[in-house]
Image (cartoon, rainbow, N blue to C red):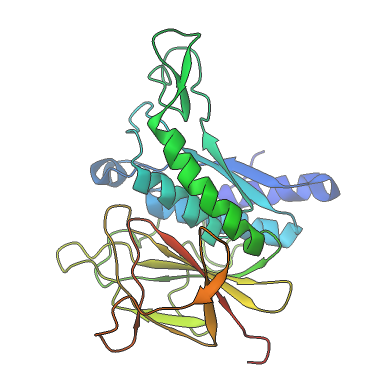
Length: 295
């Protein structure tokens, strides 16, 4: 399309289709191995994954259409087989940015040789090319999808109004990835989530894992629900560490139970410590609803 850069490419795609555009969908498979991330194009890093989501989020809001994205499930080329935490990281990072659909690459392991000959999809051949079985990622997908079905009741009809990230000091992936430039039409706020929480309906501190490896912090997706309330999707950006941030909500909050779907009281996960503590497992996401209608 002779675009001068990535944001220009997305911009032209949206403008060329115009009223015929029903949705935007893309594939992005990040490297989680730190050595590969450091050595390769940074757009293939976790930071690049966020940057790409930011560009497509801005384009979808401008065009008033939803966006979906594919994420990696299987080992191929230099990509290792993703861990359950890395699968959750890809899905819930996308959800925080406002993605209305996430797609497994691949659900059925692709046939053929390199680079996908190892299989490893959600369903893959075992013993012969004609005999398939549910792989380890089938249970991962079922676990993730069960949460998506619940959260979708709140987020599918909601409008993404902000994306924020509370970054610990010394975090390893907050640099420029070369994906876009601040101020471009599809990159108005820059590559990475805003760390200024002035317009966010909450605050959070104490997100570092430890001083030697501070980790990737807390991602906050903010949404306006049809009934005027605010939904906050909080996601642990560490795919290999748990975190216990101290948080403060701007209004009365309830938490959406990921199993029952009911709104429940927000409980302090460490009541012996001052303030409200929330615990997050590896790459875990939690959904909160704030009654901001009269704030």
